[in-house]
Length: 331
Image 1 (cartoon, helix red, strand yellow):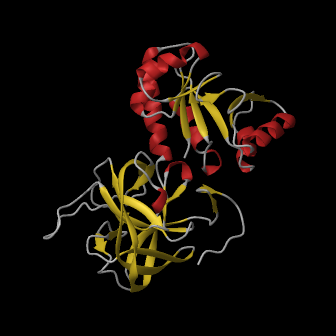
Image 2 (cartoon, helix red, strand yellow; image 1 turned 180 degrees about the vertical axis):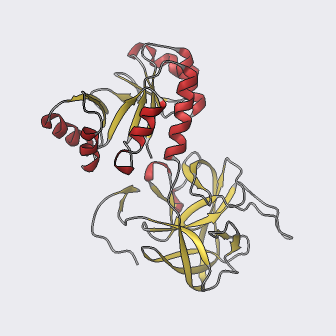
Image 3 (cartoon, one colour; image 1 turned 90 degrees about the vertical axis):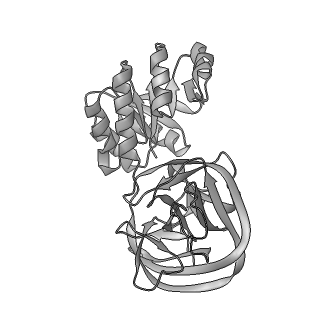
């Protein structure tokens, strides 16, 4: 996901509170204002003495030659954040960097610049530094950016086979948010294919609804998390974040409140997605539901060959939850 920073240097308290309330990822401040930010709320600071430090974690580079481009790419490969300042050419230099997978930030002062930077090479830059000094306009820009960045591509998976398995340790993820029908988390057996598992948002005659809970699957499974990461279900802890996803592909972070691991009977679902076979193991229980492209919830015990459910495909390859490019076969 793209990061959003708000420039509050020179200092303006209203800009910091706006960044906090609107959900920005960090504020750029002078070194003597880092403590002032922490008194206002919990948000990362970008400063020579902040959480993200200039010259160590982040750099500003004015790009005017191919030499500058090479320096930016080199820093990006070391996972540094680079705020790129351009001269008279503003789009093509950034396109060149994005084509080389550089982790670049750009400064944006108004909504037009936000929309332009969000769509360069159809994927946009890695991050934005909002330089507008007016809190109301900053709020609108943050909300626009969050709307742009907060989607994920869903695709129909056609179920080919369903069969019961033996017992296994399955994980319920209890979050700090209430979810509606059609909302849940993306979970899968591999790093290339994920199924949308709905939260327990529906009542039934035997168990009350628990719209904060996703009965996600066995301990080995992956769950999608913010910033393009995956987590093993077994490693989740209170305070971690996973992604809330709805049937239209909108995403937002969910804070994990509690994780329950219990021994339960399991079920294997085999399907075919746009990129090939996809599998998921879940608890064999009526309350575990998938989401169909039509927006309906279907219990896994009622899933049968021919039914389509929402899923998400990615290129395989993960290293400690981060995407990497490598030759990999997951079966």
